[in-house]
Length: 471
View 1: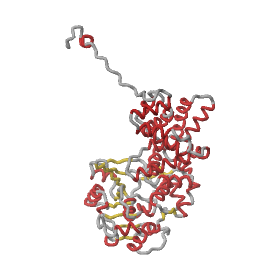
View 2: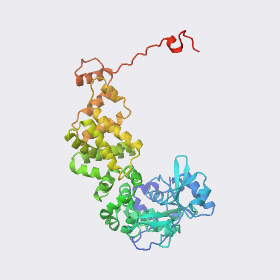
View 3: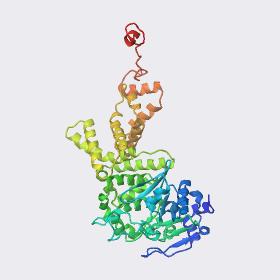
View 4: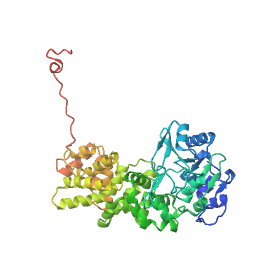
């Protein structure tokens, strides 16, 4: 795809040293720009989305500075194929909107422009400046704790680079001459496979606590170490995540667990005290039930495998596995008070979801299927008569069956039911009849499959009038 690509994939660290030369460790207070010309790097435009290039060239031809920035440049240098393309420019959101009729300005806290090409969205941001005390609150505003409530101060590319979170994300690909602008020794940190915040870590985390989640996500996704100064404040500042709106945290949770490294991400989140801020009831259940952690970990392993195999994954199943242990604890307590199992689980489900919504939102398009998967766990043991066929035909049966296998593998319930349903799905009519007979005790060879009811033909005279003629 581009020169040296194979060698780069084999030894990315050594390849970066060869391309850019050895550098001193980063971390000084005022990083300086380093321009890497086209003949000294292997990043090719052929790696980039056609639509991203269209946006870049139109901005450039209109007289604006335009750069690809962040993850797409970082991943290209690491030998990975980039998937998301973000653009930084000196054009204001209104100017961008004028250039692209297929765009819209979104956000209040951070105003950005989405340029849509069918299903692909190219995110374009204006260079951000340093917020100051003299700024109007319509452009910049911080809480007493340092949280950035609004950040719409425009600035220069240098100011924009130093406002980025990590050094490896302060890399800009210039469409004017195809050079790479490294503002914060990001290339050096790429070579060292180190994740380092730009600026004072405590200040940066207070500005936006989600940066702690991003640190964990990038560390897991890229297999990087978090630099000690960047790592140290996380455990203490983890409760700052409680200030973040649940809707935003839902999106962050999807990024955390649907990036292909869900298990490693889960481990790091718990290590730094972040998981309890996102899923408090789950953290409590892990401490009380030995099967809770294995169940969640196996669900995450399965999610990672499906992503590697490019198979679909759904947040409904992922959230279902996460919240199940806490919900079951609630249901067991209710049952101990004399409430029957089905009403107990329904009440516990509602309570668990209500508590989770205080931390991360769950859109109904995911919470409703999740509850169906949970409800089917009570139907799967009931296989007598027609019930097995009715359950098999349920829309969520396959997800509920996978969930059942998960519970068995984690040791929550004894094995056996999963094997029965595996055989029932794969068996022919005779085998299905035998399995049901074994369960219900009905004579072997007789099937309880629900028979299609023959439709009685109506008397034409009653449908169209007494004389049988259609009017």
